[in-house]
Amino acid sequence: MVTEIILLALLFLAAGIFLLCGKGAWLVAGYNTLSQAEKKKYDKKKVCRAAGAVCIICCILLCAIGYMGYKVDSGAMSETDMLIPAFVLLAVLVAAVIAAGVYISKKAKGR
Image 1: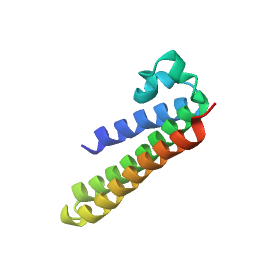
Image 2: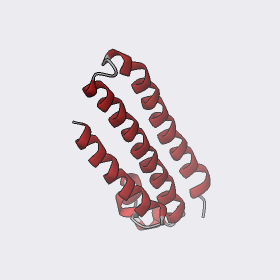
Image 3: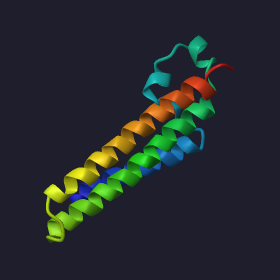
Image 4: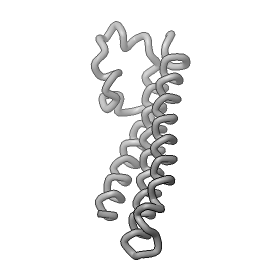
């Protein structure tokens, strides 16, 4: 199970790097479905950077969960001890998604 989490983290890392380079706007679902006239209202590179930052944060959080899963598998940590850190990591992910949405609506829109 830990190896699957690490593979998923690597996938998020690759997508994050791709998006941080300002490419891959087609990966951003909300931006991808906009009409051409609506897309012109947004700075494509800023949208990609915000989505890339969320992907990198997902990668880091998945690595942390994978590490905790490894500790559970090795017996160094119980599954119940993993609950509070997992909720904290979930809160960080939700905050990152909200921050990216605010950034896109405030900074990337309005060209």
